[in-house]
Length: 272
Image (cartoon, rainbow, N blue to C red; front, side):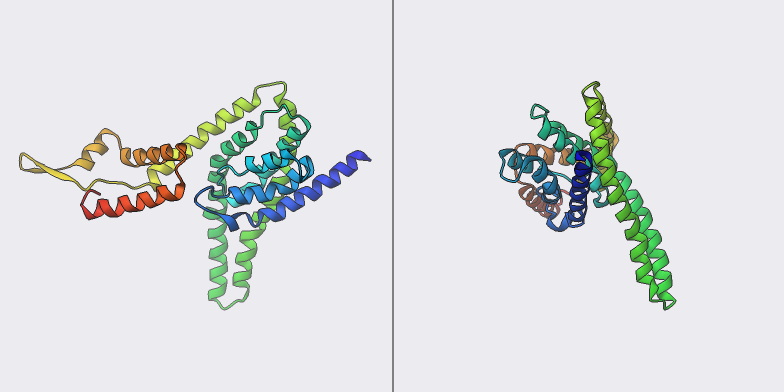
């Protein structure tokens, strides 16, 4: 009887988390990205496991305000794992709470790569192609078909991903006591995440010097020399510099303003 009550409570909690996850990006910001939305989604689990007025509840809320960003369709899977880990933390106060955010951080990069490829790069394109072709022929079903083809897979992945994450988190906890699986998971996803960040830095950050000088009557580009030494060295450097500023506690908004000022000034004096 107790198991049935726990199962009903789990399902009710997961439903509340699921519906809250649909509003994940309403509070998106450049300081913590989706952190406020994640914290809002986790509240049903945290209230159930810790109690609304307990110090542990407050600490858990602060724990889930760490920077977080992922493809929205994939976030319920991470929320399910996090809820399961929070349940174990409530039962075992000696558990290292840092595991929760480390796992969340490890999953961001790989799952975003998968989610972006399927939802933004595949389902959206197919749905838009079918919907537009039907709309052009005068069918009112065009926008409806687009809405269904894009959102049905999204909703299914969200719901079943949430349930899978919660059950997987429980199994993961059971195995962590007898093995170093957490270290291996962190290592694997850390490597994949760094690869994703490195690829994004090379393809999405653009910084080139416009300075040239003459040598033996020939025009020499400083940017060309830098690219010969190490391609995309400047984008990597500016990315690492921003990361260093964040480590020092400088506001992301201040860093963005600084980049805008640097870009305008650099262009004005012919540096970039």
